[in-house]
Amino acid sequence: MSRSLRVLVAFGGPSPEHEVSVLTAMQVLAALKETPHAAVPLYIAKNGRWYTGPRFADLAAYTDLSGLIASGTPCSFAHDPDGRTVLRQSIGGRFFSKPVTIPVDAVIPAFHGGDGENGAFQGVCEVFNLPYTSAGVTASAVGMDKRLAKAVCRAYGYPVVEDILIRESDWAADADTLLRQAESLGYPLFVKPVHLGSSIGVNRAHDRESLCRAVEDAFRYDPHLLVEKAVQPLTEINCSVIGTPDQAEASVCEQPLGSGGLLSFADKYQSGDPGKGMASAGRLIPAPVSEAVSEAIRTMAAGIFQALGCSGVVRLDFLMNSETGSVYFNEINTQPGSFSFYLWRHHGIGFPALIERLLHDALHAHRQKNGRVRSYETNLLSEKAVKGMKGLKGTKS
Image 1 (cartoon, rainbow, N blue to C red):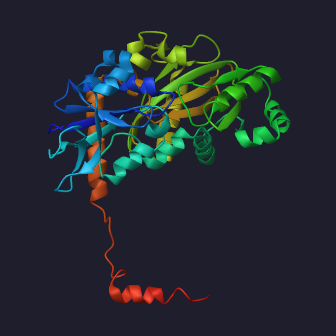
Image 2: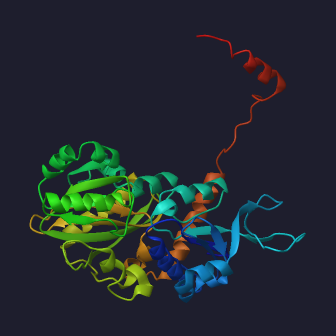
Image 3: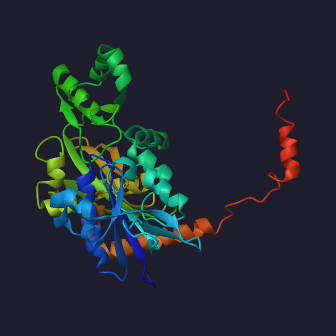
């Protein structure tokens, strides 16, 4: 990239995956130090308030979260007199002082779960016309909803495992019927919240008693959950994809290593160096599968990326029956832990270069968007037109 940018790294937020987001953001901030760009941390607390300040770029500072927040500077997006979007800092106790503003050239969302990954924060960036590196509003929302993501895959002919959707209101009204429907899939079953990641709230059920416990646990996080038929014997295969809805490139495949039949939160984030997030989790790269299977998964991953209209870098998780070789789409992570840089490193692309690629694509998409007609000039609100509209109020068809 030819010019230096002021890049906002946004992370945290009200989400059970809050701490995972902090770890990913620290990795992004470290990678940005190896680029010509200036990084500005934007930390969103668990109560939704926004803060900035240099201490938010220091992982050690998060051991005293309340003290860190107390030392931070509240902030928000705003427009300067020239109409440019800035990060406006609220400096307390300085009457008659001019607000401190930081120009923003691009945003790297590093959220996991919650309003940061489901399209809500992306919508804020759209409102303020800011380039950002993740999937857009629609792709983020669909990707965050496991039910909708699987529905899109079904519509495009990509294989998914059988499941049923359970709503909390329906469970309260008639749990027995839902249990029978779930059991018709055949044990063992997996129960998972629809709108969450990092394996939080995901449990395996072997009988009705464990199924009830799993359902109640999942409802702690989400009013909607999926009960899925387990793939047996199971091998999990993941693949990252980078690009745009028009052009997508798939990475090498990996096989994550879990401690049992379920890849847990602990397997993903606590099995290695906790400060490195997903980058230190156990995995085999490349995945020990045939070239034909690997190529089929990579092709499927790129196709699903484009079917959902994704941008940026994502990770798609697949389930493979180890005996038959059948592969099923499991879920998509539109903002994967550690940005899956460890997969791209296998292709000779380091994390700083990956960040550069994401920024380049984000700025290109932003220029394309702003190059199109974004307003439509009419005289609809002229005095004459308004008077005419008033006369329509009493009109009957």
